[in-house]
Length: 162
Image (cartoon, rainbow, N blue to C red; front, side):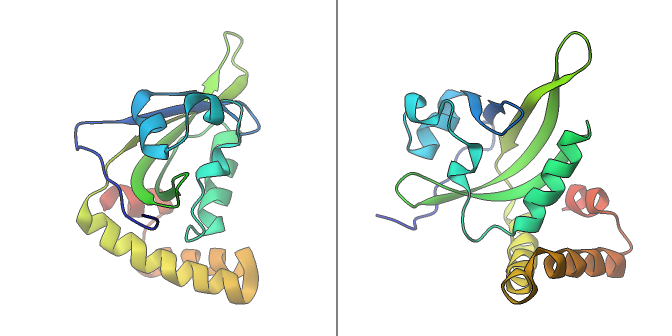
């Protein structure tokens, strides 16, 4: 049955790694099972194979800007499974480095988000998506920046306080 929300336990973590272009190079058992794809289908596929259409593009813009510049980011993400179900995660994405300090890929550890955090995020993402539909990613970014300014918080302060 499509469009069903899936979940996982509070003590479980979804882990994946990608190369510099976002192609999956590793996924733990939970990542593979919840995605609905086989390991073979996931490996070398772009990570955005899991992107849910209800995810604001501006969040991924921020994510990519951060990790490509060697910084970590936390984000709430709604993912889509192979059979069009979905699941929410609280993701911590970091760059991976080789022994000479060059970024060689990205590592993401995801945990189950709290209901309270999701209530806030779902409302915000709905507003961001409406902005994207009418004015593109620039409008969505402006909405996010205005929201954060009204709260008097940076993106990180906002996300980590949820």
